[in-house]
Amino acid sequence: MFVVIFKAEIAQLDHEYSQLAQHLRQKALSEYGCLKFESYTENGQELALSYWSDLESIQRWQQDREHIVAQQTGRKRWYKHYSVEVCELQRHYQHNQTK
Image 1 (tube, rainbow, N blue to C red):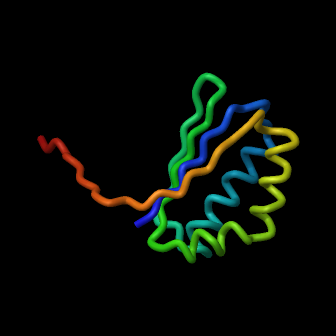
Image 2 (cartoon, rainbow, N blue to C red; image 1 turned 180 degrees about the vertical axis):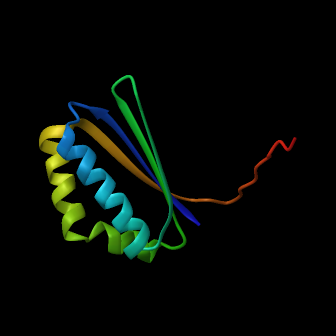
């Protein structure tokens, strides 16, 4: 399994950003094989984690035309800077408290 880590310093987020982000999230999940997507925004920083079963799916997602246009708009309007890391998960475990 792979995780794509997107980190950004926010310039401004607006209604168009919110709508487009939701649309692209659903598209990644339904059309490109994204397994899970979660994002967090705090103190002018954004962190998004998307989980994928293989690198090929990530590469197809990177080539999606709407995704490319959103990245271009992000550089111009929404983000001061950002970084993307693609990592392979070597191990995963969790604990669930049951009552």
